[in-house]
Every structure is written in C-alpha cells, then in structure tokens.
Image (cartoon, rainbow, N blue to C red):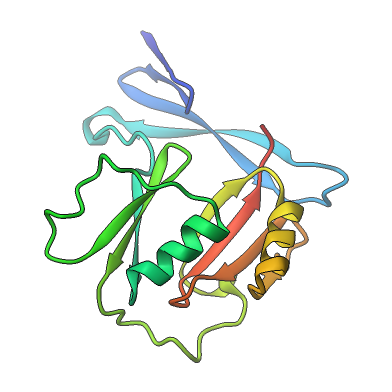
Length: 175
C-alpha cells in the first residue's frame, strides 16, 4: 500500500509501513552554471516519525535589545511579530519574521566569547537565512559599514556577524 503526503515543503509516501521522503541535495557549482539538484530517498520508520514540519524559530542571544533591533530591523529589514508574547518571559526579547519562520532575540548574558572567534562565520555556529540576491545584501552591508566574508566554496553566500558577534549566513536561493 502506498500513501502520499504532499505539501509546499515536501513530498512523502508510506510504502510497506515505512515513510519514504525525497530530499534535495544541493551541489555547489559556479553561479553561472546554477544549482544542480539531485534527488535521493530517505526512509523514516512510521513509529519514530513525530511529525517534523519545519524550523519554527532560532534563538539568538543579545546584550542590548535596542542595538540588536537596530541591526535586524534597520539593516536587514526584518519585521517584528507583534503576536508573539515578549512580556510573559523573565527577560527582554523580540520575535522577528524571517519568511514564515522567526528569530527570537533574547536579552540574556552570552556565554560565548565576543573575541577570538573565527573571522569567517561559516567556521562558527551560525544561523543561515535564504535570500534571493546576495549582491544586493552585499551593497547594504557596504553602505552600513558591516564587515562580511563571502562563501569560500564560491557559491552565492555572504557571512556577517550581528552586534553581539552571532554569525549569520545569507545564502542565495532561486524562487
């Protein structure tokens, strides 16, 4: 018996009591050639499938909420999700929309050192945001005086750090 599940995020089917989920592996090639997609099948045991849908949010620590909001709102152009509670938590924070997911800024002490970190954010813990045009973001960073590095692999991606040295990757996607 085969049961199909389709959404805007994935296509999956159940065959012989096991989930089969096609996934996409993106291979980096020169920007001129574009992305090459290769399909593969991943089996998920129906008993252990607890229903992963998508990434909901990423928590990012900040020392000063206003300074971080200046960066995330005014440089990156992210909008606050007013529906998320920020007054019910024992610390200050804000929820910012990133497409249909969110960043949760939390004004809490950061256990990570601010200095001595890898210059290239791809060699540090980082959050990756899919964008449509790396060159436009590069121009925004240049205008704002924000330091960045480009992807070492040659794919269209740019890495920067927020005011609290949290590494952010912005990778260019089609669509």
